[in-house]
Length: 164
Image (cartoon, rainbow, N blue to C red; front, top):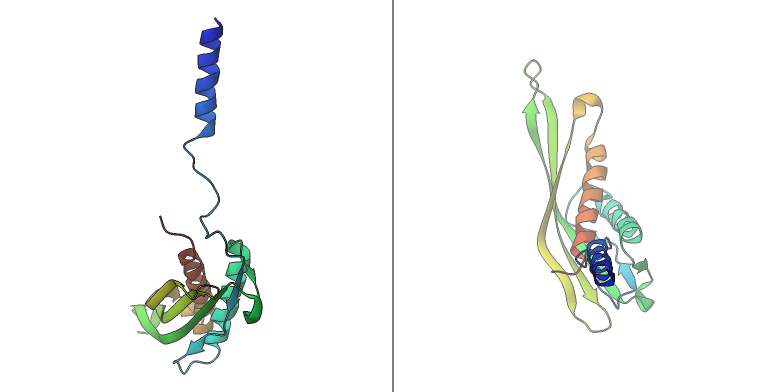
């Protein structure tokens, strides 16, 4: 009887413990702070680099265990440059010939570097993110870029997770 009870309790313990999975995202241990340098831009469009830098800071604060810090005290440094922005019509209105839906693609390069060791943690030379917006319902290029740059910031933060 006691042996059977021990087996049942042991099996319940195994079932409840799972397989070692965790709901926490796998960020690098040993890193506490990140300095996000103001991004640069080769594009003529104004303020995209400011908007993306701000979106990165917000995403790092919301989605990671890292804190934003000044360069002199930061463990790591995130730098980057917007290389180009392209727009394209995805579908035209049959009556007017004007775009019904428009897409925008942002191409950038970025690097995340450990300032203590000099090692490059993540480096992407041509990182691409696309978004869509619909002018007939009042969405403008600016609206699409806000959504697109936030999506790009989210993808960059995801790349800061440790690899499998």
